[in-house]
Amino acid sequence: MEKPEPKTIDEYIAIFPLKTQQILQQIRETIHKAVPNAKEVISYKMPAFKQNHVLVYFAAYKKHIGFYPTGSGIEAFQHEFGNYKWSKGAVQFPIDKPIPLDLITRITKFKAEKDLEKISKKKK
Image (cartoon, rainbow, N blue to C red):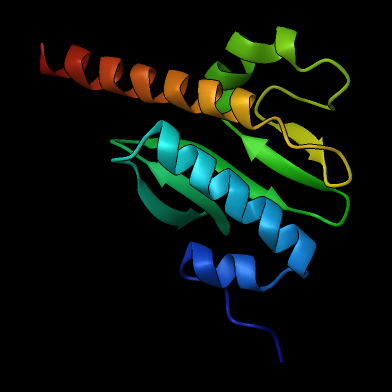
């Protein structure tokens, strides 16, 4: 029998081994500090933070954490990814290396600003 899909970030985090849970919790807290009013959601079966639109997603895998700030977040910060694997919508942070929480903070704040700009343009 398949496990039910997590409906909250707490349920999502609880699926993983303790070390991974600690990393996921750190990322969650980092995003919360960056954008305190963002709402936690599960989207595409991953934890995500939403303001007007989803800002960022993250997910755990066996050897890395996937961080998904979508195209605009990747484009704006790709010069800072160094040795991390990345694509047009995602960057991978190895579980066995320190997670760049400062970079996650800056990307998340950038995405929140872009989200607010998008909403204010729609209102005009």
